[in-house]
Length: 93
Image (cartoon, rainbow, N blue to C red; front, side):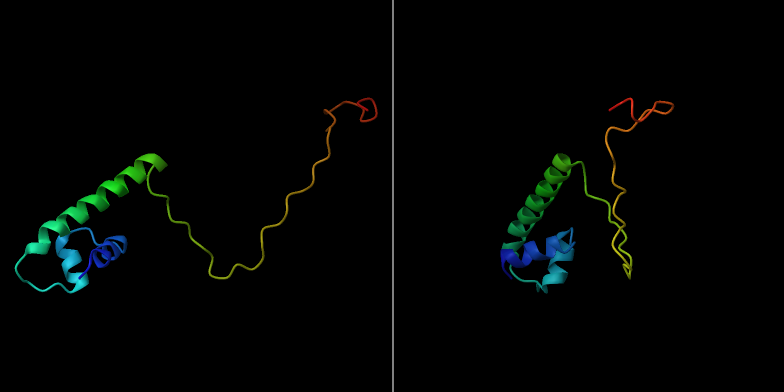
């Protein structure tokens, strides 16, 4: 298992050492990699919290329609200047 494997598991949603170990298929062994695993998890959490703090939190998910029938209609063109209600349009020019 490499650090990139661990980072991939963290990016995919694993949030604990137990979840990362299960997702990456780690087998019990000498335990020398466990300390580094906890360090990578801590780095990921710190980075995620920093991004959330800078951007105002995670963005809400938006529902995408299953079948977007047509693009949104264009906005109606505006003509300037618009006459004020009760005013003669030719007087403004």
